Length: 361
Ligand code: HEC
Ligand SMILES: [Cu+2]
Image (cartoon, rainbow, N blue to C red; front, side, top):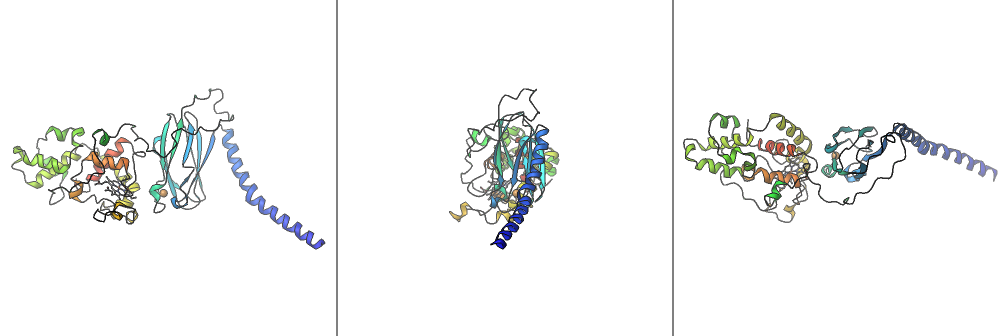
């Protein structure tokens, strides 16, 4: 009896130590962190980044108030993740397992801001996204700001459902304005260049381009194969070879794209696209091999990510069409949307960059 009791006591104190380690110690640390931040007048939001198969970001929807500074404390229990919130200027390249990254943000403008993981952390990495709703509450009077007074719980936005976020520009996308059906069947271009057209060779021809090709708004609506045909049929180009005319097309499309824009797109491509479309653009990236897709329903459809070096397919598409697909994604093929992550400039820069898989400098 007595022995039993003493054993019970021993277990009890062992349990106490375990509890102390498991509960009190973390509470002490986190409590300290919370206290430290609270004393600085900053509200803390914990974001746990887990591999998408384990749930992705948690929370993946949060609500902040315009004008209020919060400290995001981002951690990962499994593999290395990244975090970008383009609309709020947040870019964390590496969230190492077991380490906490802190970022302070003060959203100024009410609105909805997409965030996403930037490291290929698993097959479903591209699904690892979330959204921050910034509500427009009258800012607290300056006298109370930054003093760590109690903050009302965040409002849950009315539109917190799963609807598509507007593009960064917040406007109606061009493909919709022009009534372009992104899902329509597209026929391969009838005419394609024999070799890679060269932008420099096109420039050297000193040809005069028609307005439809100099005006970017018009040019973007044209399939490149049609532009080729227009230039080919123009008597002033009669002396040019087909290869020359293709070089004119390459020049017309890329001459006004600043190198900085292409460089930015190259970085984004490596981060967001290469895993599926391949570093060489041929559509053979490891993450693109086994996507769900339309091919399961209709085996005659091309399988997997688009090959950007395939002239027949790429030259039949206008920039607006490609931009629409990039904006909206979906298509039942595993192509993600980037409309909520890329600015308008980044979208157009990316489309120009995709053209460089066919056109050489
Ligand atoms: C998870 C894999 C995946 C990722 C990541 C991905 N794509 Fe795709 N993408 C696809 C698949 C699959 C298709 C084929 C669907 C189609 O062509 O309609 C596609 C199609 C496209 C198309 C349409 C091509 C056409 O001719 O109609 C464009 C443009 C495109 N991707 C650009 C990009 C860009 C740019 C990125 C990176 C910012 C990207 N994709 C990231 C899988 C991916
Ligand atoms: Cu990831």
